[in-house]
Figure (cartoon, rainbow, N blue to C red):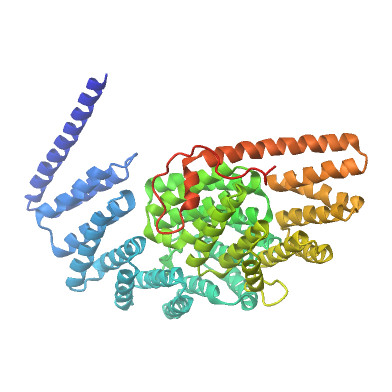
Length: 626
């Protein structure tokens, strides 16, 4: 059978070579036809496009067709366009980024050396745009910037490309956290769009200018932009595209601020808007102004983005099953898109989705799955230096959270320390510090380091970020420390503040954690009735999330409470629940620590390791879990 199969493959390859040779012969004859001097070029393009759009795409044959163009010594313009087409195909459909880069650089050089001809200007700008994107993917930002600046300088007579290139350079500055330069460029874009009469592109620029504003200044700006977007008159696709853009900014602004309840109306509008835009056809009405041809994101990418912000909301609110549902939908959509499109933003979406679902898994007691998904993020980052640069701190943070879940506190400290070294993002910094403080509290012997951290995230005075959620978490950490120190009245004050803040914004997990800790305090103080009033709703909420650790903690307290209150049957039920949760956590703990990926907990510097050696078994204590 294998021999037959190999013969079939050999015949198939031979047939492909014969087909290519025949094709070149036919095209060679066409090239000699004096009456149709360009027919060879059109034929090659036709064949290339046919192979590119085949199902599945036949990229090798497509590339052969485009390479055949050079055999006919085409004019310089045609040569430049062909290099662009080859670079684009190789960049989007293969992993041969070096060859793609070589063709794109040749396209830029050939086109720059040619005289100005309006019909060919798009070659110059598209090549510059695509090449700078590839440079960024390879972490060659210093090569991308001058290329984009030069293209911007010479594109003022081409509105579509001028706006697009300005956006691209602004995005590059944003990735480097240089928001001042990014906003300067967007301001230039907004003014240019006004001059050429493109209100649509102008509003796209104005919306992005919101990124640099402080929280207090954003609310009135959002209101103003919302009114402008609703009153803008344009074709349906552009109108809905602009609304999606605005609503994504609005939703992410609320989520960054930790306002999970306040964001619900905007999120609902966004979900309705993406349903509307998915029913419209892109070619229904073409705008008359060339500058209006700009689209901030393809429709298919918008759908994934809406799934993504829905997952972000569900995770913050503690609707973890809903987060899982939308993650599955988004990843399925991404898988389909990545078969046809290797745009870097799709990998970014995938990494952010995985980052959020990993946190959900750790809460729901699926550590082994979370660890495998952390490994998946590592693999994605290995494929793109830029992606790793942007997500290294998040990766170490996720590993720190995993280490806490398997009681490897020394490794957790090392991971969080590595993450702090790598991040410049204030909200992520505060999140890491909060979790590192919880590690020091559990260790019980790191008082100096702990108090140093707590001074930097004091929720009562000059809290470093504007996030409602993170400030509520800082109150909880203070309450946890006071509980371990036996200062119960102080602990109750901090925890009641956490409850007030978490209830105001539907932060269900913080609510459940605060209730069970308050219940524990009342139990220690001998106030069993009040303890029961806290622990029962904590258990109900934890079951709804579901939060395995809080369920384990609550069931242990309920067992002891019901014993103290003389409720024998209820005490037995609680004991059985506690036993079930313990067994689930124990099995998951053993499974996670036995995975070869568990060795990632020792990685704290440089790129993520590619290979993992198998573990002999769990390396951490199970006592804290049970």
